Amino acid sequence: MLWYKSWRESRVRFLLSISVWTILCVSLMYRARTGFPPPERTDLPYSAWVWANIYGNMNTTVFIILVMILGLGGLRREGPVGTTSFTLSLPVTRNRLLGVRAAMGLLQVILLSFLPAMLIPTLSPLLARQNYPESQALQFGLLFMAWGAVAFGVGFLWSSLFAGEFTGTALCVISPLVYRIFISSSSALQRYPAFNYANFMSGLPYIQSPVKVLIDRPLPWATFLILAAVSTSLIALSARLTRQQDF
Amino acid sequence: MTESYVIETQDLTKRYRKFEAVRNLNLRVGAGRITGFLGRNGAGKSSTIKMLLGISRPSSGSGTLLGRSIDVAAQCCESRRHVAYVAEDKQAYGYMTVAQMIAFTRSFYPDWNVDMERRLLKQFDLPIHRKVRVLSKGMRTKLALLLALARRSRLLILDEPSEGLDPVSIEELLQALVRAAGEGTTVFFSSHQIAEVERVADHVCIIDRGRLVADTSLDQIRRDYRRITFGFSTDPPRVDFTGEGIGSVRADGRQVTVMATRNADAIIERGHRFGAASIDTNPVSLRELFLDLVKEESRDALV
Image 1 (tube, helix red, strand yellow):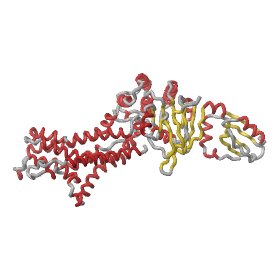
Image 2 (cartoon, helix red, strand yellow):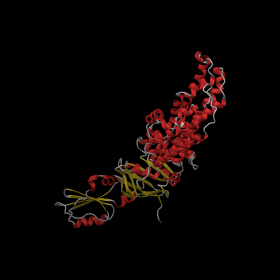
Image 3 (cartoon, each protein chain N blue to C red):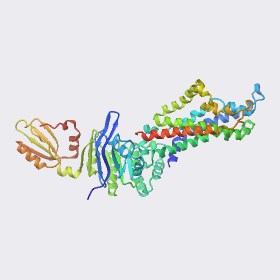
Image 4 (cartoon, rainbow over the protein chains, first blue to last red):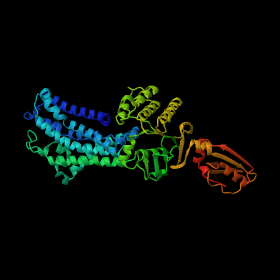
């Protein structure tokens, strides 16, 4: 039943995120029906159009904000609502409470990451009268998932530090933007493409052909592992803080 | 026969920065009793209960709940399997309906008493399909009580259970507590409503400014506690009234009032020796005892 509680507490945020992401994907394909190819670039491949409108623009920041917001909630948030005492009087450890919430959130991040992979190859023939390779959508999904997990971990950490609903949300909006500015201003960090979430999620380091804009280099599996470790560490830190907190 | 205790604390202390909410509390709650935990607002009742349940951590000292340490997360979690708790704010998840809330709570307790659940649902007239967030405070309290009582727990802890309830609901609550105790559950409830404690409790612990100032049975208060007023024809002599059985001493003009916790006869005899012109002895109610213990001026033992 902790899963049920976790789902009920996150479902509005999750359904909102799914809606935003679905609207972005569907509107892209709907626009492609009449607006693709653009008159000034009649030779533009559909894959490049999808990349420019979904994977390679500010949508990466929107995605990061959405998954960070998925990380919010939890015991600190229950404080102002007044249910912390009830939750903590149940015969479950704080670790288990957090574990279930983290697992539910990560599952939602995975679904959100692969939503374009489900929508774009399926709906492109219907809405845009174009085809988009499923394998490409899945690879972009992996890139989104890897950084999405880290962003979720950051949101999760904010949730264990701040009780206010607006404080957490504001931090989730501000922190990716601040992080982007920080990364752009540091030449040392720019040498590592994985540090720049927008660069990493757009797949740019793994795309050879600038015309078709398709991932044709091997995916960075070691980086995936590092990002997974970062996400796990953030969640573990959050659990450690929560274990020590008074409610 | 040695008495078994469901709650035991040793020098339990809780500090919030410089403020000490609970100070070196040595509390023992016997099994099978209804124990009232009395204190003014902010006396440290809720802080104590939260430490016992692992909701907050002691700053120092230690304690056990049903024989398991309150400092070790795993042990604390294990003891919570046998404890039902009704928090001060009586909040439940607002997004769930009453039925969902019951199903959710039931899933954690294999011994859930379905008959009790049905009986209380009917008795409290709870609307099972209504969302918790739209329930009145009285209804929320009743739901919290149902969720606690149906767990078939060994220990029932309630923090200010009657706060915000109308007289009829308070009556139902008190009856439910007495019934739970009759079925073998130990009840420990905090309150600042002396009349409620006096009605249902058989033992009382009084906390003031984080310290335990009384730990006694209601029977003992009725049997042994006396307010003895000595009247003197001149200013009272400066004599030492402290000693065994003397709770507090207060001087007011030519009168000296002693709160005796036992040995009333010996204290009266002492008053005679000191030259008291009149001696008036009265039984002490819980209310009088409570006020005597928590009133600041009562601490000043004059004479």
